[in-house]
Length: 185
Image 1 (cartoon, rainbow, N blue to C red):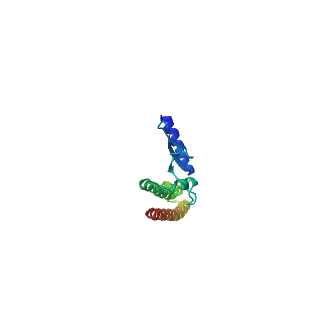
Image 2: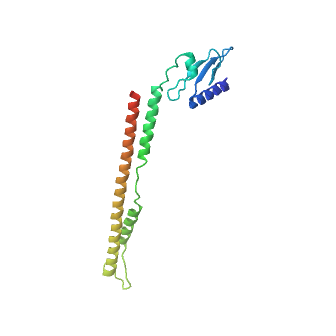
Image 3: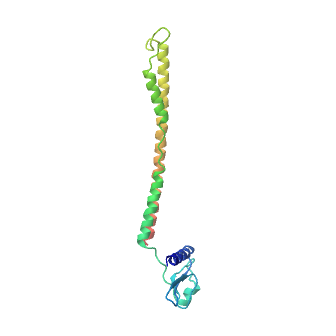
């Protein structure tokens, strides 16, 4: 019995997907069959397919076709909610977190330069050797410039990313408004 029901459901699903007219017939032994073609004198249309508003000849023979089925409101609401959630999730994925690796590396190098005590061949520390101290200060200034330029670049990337996310979220809101307007008609 389960295989028959599964076969019927698969056949019915295929019919729905292809947007065909589906007929329901009762057999002489009481069994119910579904078909894309009228299966007897007692064939009843379960689903009527129309292409661009045309009625099928079978519907004309039986009188007027049943009104097209409106999707279940609960199912449509769930579908709309899923669409909106997916849209918003995809918009959030546009957010970019810039790399701070260069900034961290430059800060480590500055800390290392500040902690290093240079001793020359005469036993003088870097504090006593102006040339070494000047070179260390130049390296620190250069590293601070790297940090500054990386921070500026990262701020621009964050601003650009925020704009992309905001634009995508606005598009999600527009689509949601359109769905709600269609549903209220």
